[in-house]
Image (cartoon, rainbow, N blue to C red; front, top):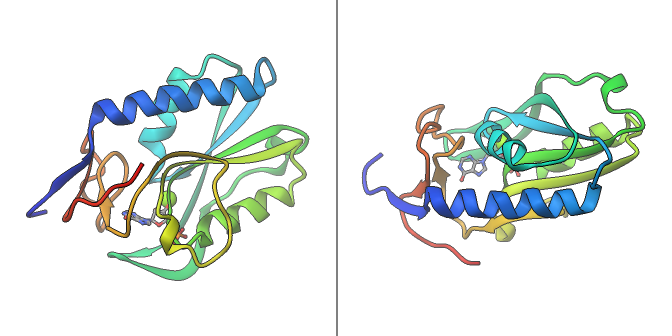
Length: 176
Ligand code: IMP
Ligand code: MG
């Protein structure tokens, strides 16, 4: 992608991920937590978060999609499901790469809530707060970003650029 600017460096991402892992650990302590990674975008973030998480962690995956190119289609597709027996009566944390309109997180939140977890929290590396259409805010947020299309560290543009170790964008706009 031409004119790519670094929005968050690898070091910033790793430092903040460590802080989030510590915050989550202080919330759950020695209670087992099921971390539900949303494929594909959150896979890098989830792996780093869990490597830094010192408590009992179980890793599960779901796959949902709503995007085509730079636009959210508004229709959520569940491509890889999760089993109720892995969720019921467990502490669950949904791990997302980025919350934009909020549709995906809300869909997944309600979907998992219906499986009767002991508790349910949501953790997103990035939050595009001003783009929210569905009123849902992640409980744990890495960074707030302005309205710009970001790529790298799991985030794609038509499946490319996920392997960048940092987060970039065409124009640099970042708060927090
Ligand atoms: P939402 O349902 O509109 O909140 O969209 C959330 C999903 O869209 C995220 O999990 C990402 O997969 C994708 N997405 C949203 N914004 C971006 C972006 O700036 N870059 C890459 N993917 C994005
Ligand atoms: Mg995602």
